[in-house]
Length: 179
Image (cartoon, rainbow, N blue to C red; front, side, top):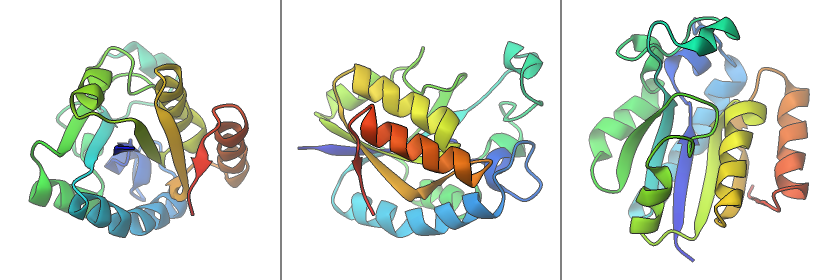
């Protein structure tokens, strides 16, 4: 088993208090739970991929959601301590992957990146649990990666949506739930 961490959308607009579509305190708590795990993963030489929304100013997604994560803005940057972690460790094993939709595999090179590193298992964390984390976990499952989920390293707009999505990952995607 060779693992990679997929840290989904842990950016200012989804985590910071003043973010355009923020999870607020639950998202900030998830970051604090996630940081020691990422340090451990880095020490174990596991691949860490920050898969982050990066939209054009006129993205069609803004017909569905408020404007968020516009490429090049503060809202599209990794949230606080994750930005510091990324800047300290970025390189071949710590990468930032821009995405334009919920599933980090859709229209990106994520699968190629994971395969080139020999990855068999992905650990999904981030926000929102029921939207982009679930879609990315599904994308991994459909590509035959073993899926692991870290519930306390994820957050959602509501606790109900979070709990439901974690159960769906467990029951539908057969994700191993890590505590």
